[in-house]
Image (tube, rainbow, N blue to C red):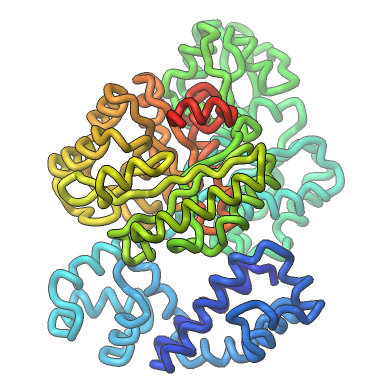
Length: 573
């Protein structure tokens, strides 16, 4: 097992021990160990093989043995025995907002609830109303959470679907006779939420059966839904549906365009084809008068034949891309390589898993010129927010590291909470000492749209604020964003010269790409920030790049494509 899988199991053990009512010190040891393993910057397997796993602070002899078993054998009897004491579906309850281990234990002990079905039934029977620590309002919120879970039960976060698609695609590509293959659908368009996976393959008819057999018999396949000559469908063990289509190679460009979508984009492309007296479908491009095929070897040739410049998959959402392509005015979209650093990252000063130095060293390994640290502010007690004394201590450490680094710079920022009245949770003097301030809402999500908009607008007008963090507070597949008039917020950011972030954490991807384009039109600068809580999280900027591309952003629209010298000027340093 890798460190991510080991950390996940250690955390599950902590939850199970809490459900059992075990000694809180023992429970906490597993949570801390999970956090420690997640924050390792070196190779976990090497630590285990060298016997140095027990030398890590907080990892005692017993924990070292369990981690070693997970890494070397891929299983842990202690974990399996713990799981056997509870219903198999108990962890489903953890996906409902507001239900932590203590409340789940209460539900299990008092009402025997061990699954979402049982929980929903109990709520509908009003059994939580009189249960200590719950009540009518909590019951109502739990039911809303269950409804949301049902709604999103067949949806997946982008990186989950991307990893699954990459794995099964790599497996299929080893089949005999494949000429070309691509992942298509919403994954290719880099949508934030994925329903299923579409893979397109070109091959001759004689090789089709072997390709389909290799696909349907893959080790990651849970169930085969259909197996045909040109299309097969399976459900992976991760729960994701995958469709594989095999076409003749001459049809591949047309099928790739069609199955990439979106449906709305395809409708408009067919309209453009008709204007050129042509017919376009997944099989080819044909003359409208005599059905004579128009040859296109690559997907880009289709656009050329229709008088359009090539439209990148991310833009194919019927959002003005065809009109812009016709005028040759599509943007030169930002790419991963354009980023020179990032901001809004957390360290062990607040709720991060890695130290300042570890985060900075990881950023340098990514060939970045700078890294902005924005730990939580003092009112965020749940995240060990920084007191004024902590701020001074952190600044001293950053100054010392910057002297040692030379050409690389750490910027000292803060993620300051926007309080209910729109003020920030430090005084002006303290705020002025930071290199930059990210202002974010972390509380009172249920304010009316008018109140929330007024609250955020006041924060934007604060002279110390440089960027608005995760502007809707959404958690994809879990929590809808709070009510807020984003048009007014973006307009205010434009008026006051403030930036807005695309929070690149795959559970957020906030600002939404639909509003990113509007922000660009209003001249609002964008930060692409990972909200990283460990060194691995820095790489999440690539998900933000996908959203930036969907929002038509070019390198010049994004603050952290600037050089170190230019970013210093931008921040007024």
